Image (tube, rainbow, N blue to C red; front, side, top):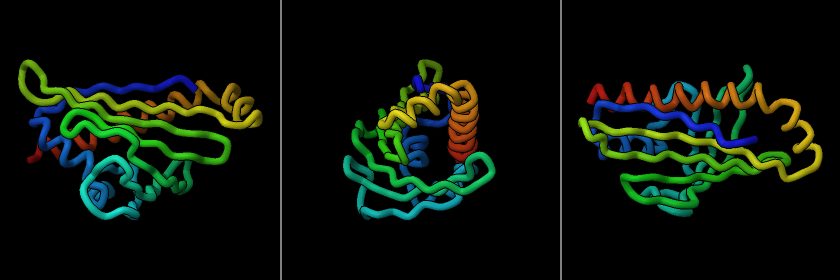
Amino acid sequence: MQDVEVRRHVAAPVERVWELATDLEGAPRVVSGIESVEVLTPGPFAVGTRWRETRRIFGRSATEEMTVTAVEPHRSYTTEASGPGVRYVSGFAFAPSAGGGTDVTASFGAEPTTTVARVLGALTAPLGRRAIAKALAQDVADIATAAERG
């Protein structure tokens, strides 16, 4: 699957948006798509931070173990997860907007690691891309709402 990318302007400073986007324990209260988070590596949000995130996807709960693989504080972070036959890479980027506030970009990509996953991915790519784009847009909208409330 090719990367899916969603962009949105948030009327709040980068520091506030970053704080909400990296608050793992608070994520279920901010992001409506997240049912629960179990932090596996306590401490500051950094490369190597791991957690289990449970989301409702296609009408059922799904849990993935996420690992932070890159961080530029207040600018961007990347996470990776592996599922049956697939490696997922997702990320957020935060940029101060010329008119004030923050421009947020959220991205998601999936790389099949087995032949079966490649075939299934080819068959379901359009549906999957739409579902992922909708979920990413909702995640960013939820973070924006919380950040703009202050």
